[in-house]
Amino acid sequence: MQNAALRLKNLAEQLMGAALPVRIRAWDGSETGPPGAPTLVVRNRRALRHLLWKPGELGLARAWVAGDLDVDGDLYAALDLMAEFIWEQSEDAKSLRQSLREPRFRAGVRGLVALAAPFLPPAPPPEEMRRHGRLHLHTKGSDRQAISHHYDVGNEFYELVLGPSMVYSCAYWESPGSTLEDAQRDKLELISRKLALRPGMRLLDVGCGWGSMAIHAAREHGVTVVGVTLSQEQAAYARKRIAEEGLTDRIEIRVQDYRDVRDGPYDAISSIGMAEHVGSARYLEYAQDLHALLKPGGRLLNHQIARRPQADESAYTVDEFIDAYVFPDGELAPVGTTVDLLERAGFEVRDLEAIREHYALTLRGWVANLEAHWAEGQRLTSPGRARIWRLYMAASALAFERNRIGVNQVLAVKTPEQGTSGMPLRARDWRVDS
Image 1 (cartoon, one colour):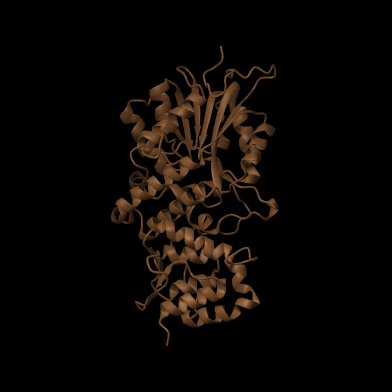
Image 2: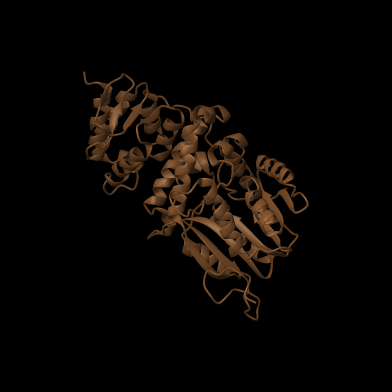
């Protein structure tokens, strides 16, 4: 009888019609595949049951989070090879789920069922987001639940991953050899310059996280800041940092939905890595709310991940792994859609800077931090949660590097009716034109 690794290799190649680019190590200790290639470790038969009961990304994600699937070797190389094998080698099928249902693959599926026996549905890992329908997507209650799922997993865990800056968005790198801390400081300073912050101004930081932008703006530019977040853990951490910096008289942190902010006008608004949570159905409302909160001539810096546009936008679906385990209810839009909605809300878009390569460097820095403290990371949250963060950050780094997704800083102005924007004549000179 063939060993389990060889059987898995043959079944995978039968299903996909191409040579498997990685090695396989199975639960019986057998191993096969290209010498020197990264090794996909199938720890038990339950990994196959996850995939068969939920074909596609969700089944693979469940097996990974549960520890039934692992990678021995370079994770980035393994993800790159497997992504090409699964998605590009499935010919005209749009996903692995569709491939497994096609008649020409039924023999391979039957072989997997036999190898996965007993064929009982495995329980999802406890880290998976549980929902009761999606009828009320992006209400204040559902957004609060989604934000808590992602951010309220322990501030000490985020300290380990993000480093001392505690900034959870794309850094701005002078060179690949810069430190993560320097790159995050430079990002906060870049945003401050684009907003033309100066003493006496009032800044609203939407989705303020652990308070890093608020602290930088108040300490380095003398502004007064209101930061809003839906995460109780983030707010408590930010308030402690602000007190330690002696900035409690200039920074207020609220646990508040941006839709409930009523104390405008503000001179400037920063929204850094928050708008991905808003959702397409609410995005115009989001833009209109921020426009209403700005004084005439006020600036918005909207820092947001974007996806590539599709030929049929109605066919767009969210990533199952990201939706279930990372950012529940998060949605990405093409940058053109974002610009259009900001302008429909009344903004004048004055600058767009695409910085996707910077996010790849940032994510690789976060992965390196987690891998360097792997045992501690698992202790601070859970083994499954640590595995989620390692996989999603590594896969996201590759997605930015391969131009599958991007990230953009959009600078928009609430230009008064007389058309005076306050912007300088020279591009990329962020001072206010006198």
